[in-house]
Length: 76
Image 1 (cartoon, rainbow, N blue to C red):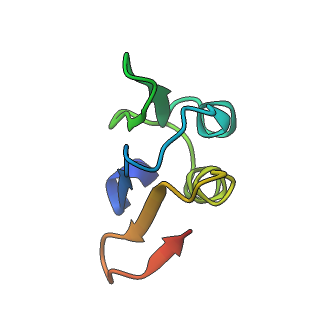
Image 2: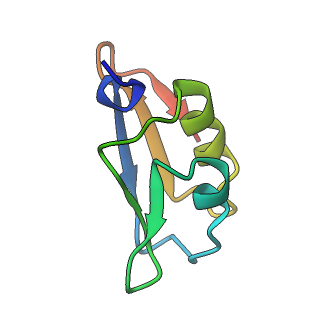
């Protein structure tokens, strides 16, 4: 099972400024949509640490990452 399947990853588009740092940090997890908001790609091959670090590097804390099994918030 891919790490993305073990996580709940959401992006608050009201907070996202389209900086793209998440796309650089976790390129198979995040992409910018036509509106300039980051969105999550479910076929990600990035590992858990890469995804969490990308979320932590978001300048506006627009990305929320939780562990799917226990609900623990991992980022921001």
